[in-house]
Image (cartoon, rainbow, N blue to C red; front, side, top):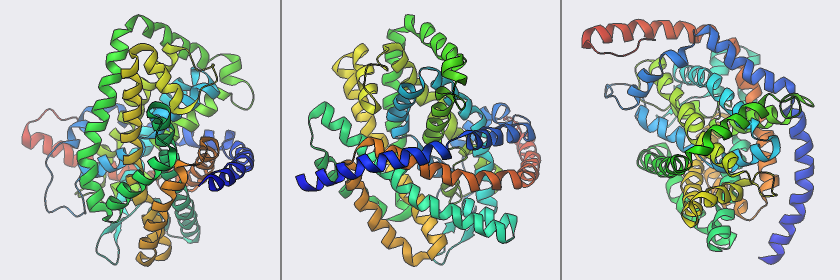
Length: 467
């Protein structure tokens, strides 16, 4: 075991340097502009739908569905599966990394990414449901690879779909696998002195038992698991903020001032605050990445726009709620320039205000978040492989994915996060191009459902907000 760990550490040092250089190129101005620009473009084309319809969308999450609707899981299960994949290490370790690298101003740019990203997430989910198909096992299959191929309906669309599927199948090992088990291992080692390989073994076994069951088992587990884990972390964070409310105004002031300072906000190629805020914002909520629509495509729904509204709430919950709690706590504690990073910094920040209880909140939050993210991303990865190879390659992919859970637990966080950044950027490019090209379809489907929603409102004489 010692020789294996030593060999991996040597590989990590060289790999981190190479991946860091690649990541700097990928996450340069072109991708940042395309990412935020797509969200802004869709926001205007949809007439600020994410702000107008958020209450209605939140209501839809818990509304009853027509049992005759096609799909494999309920739209609530589709949302919790997507939330399971997004509420993970990005909310705890990713926010900390963003603040360390980009300063407090990075939190502001995470918010901006989320607000425009809600429109992006809506469009992704709508297209995923509209262009979904049934695979050879009779289950729903959808996502960017399908709406790129079927929506664009040309060789370019097929090429973009294949490219996305390749990058997604690889990205699953980074953002949805190794970063998660790595963060969990670091937290348990720091809090309870649990050896990383022990955490790796436990996560590997437990996740493997769920993953082999496919989307229906994953959907049932996340529907039960996600609300509990989110409520636990949010409640603990809100208690901390309320107890130290006198520091909140100062923290917000620092976040806004640093976001627009010449050095932190606009120095260099767009500034560290913008670069890391946008990159970690995407890492957290995945808006524009093209991952969550894969889960949305499996949902039982009668109209693509109905599920799209449900999926849109994912970004709000993930970033505007959960990431804000983490970011505020880190800025309030003021330890972000003290040499700590990742979940260790978040844990120390919580502990500064709540003592050991704060440390335990973060550690347990990490365990819940990382485990659920592994489950969600295992499905994303296998659907990408299913598109590329057919269902025959899915079972093999599942076993390989489970093995990498253990590998991630004993690698260093630097190389894992850099690998994730590279894969995330490569996934985003074809997906964003597809969203822009198919924006007219998104608008048409939205208008179609608006009439349906208005009719339902009149029939039920409810106070629902129309789209």
